[in-house]
Amino acid sequence: MQLVINGDAIDINAPSTEETWRAGQLTDYDPGAVSLNTGYLRVHSASQQFLDPGQAGSYEICSTRTAYTSAFSGNEPNELDGRDLCIRTEEGRYAVIRLVNQSDDLITFSITVWELASR
Figure 1 (cartoon, rainbow, N blue to C red):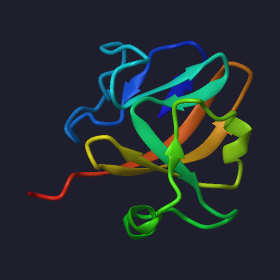
Figure 2 (cartoon, rainbow, N blue to C red; figure 1 turned 180 degrees about the horizontal axis):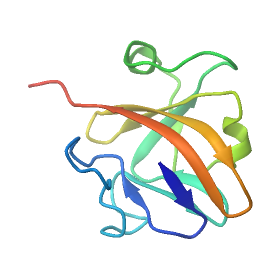
Figure 3 (cartoon, one colour; figure 1 turned 90 degrees about the vertical axis):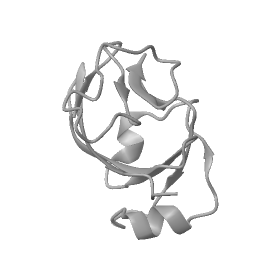
Figure 4 (cartoon, one colour; figure 1 turned 90 degrees about the horizontal axis):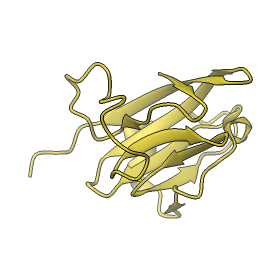
């Protein structure tokens, strides 16, 4: 997934069948919105926890972590260089975000979101 600084947000809560992640269909303040505002990666209505350098995020790892903090204050993309970021949404989904590449105005992330378990 590529995000442009001050560009469209994507929806981390979008159904897995939604190929565009609802890009351009939500604001930066909608629950689950992932955006790059003023150069900071922000995830609205979610909490986050960085993993140790080199530790790969997975559902098992992210869902058992307990030291989550608010994700909306944002992270500089270079904070993700070599580190996965676990996300927990208000809906209870878990995700992992990994920095793939960055330039002055375009940043590429790998984002894996796990569906909610049937209740």
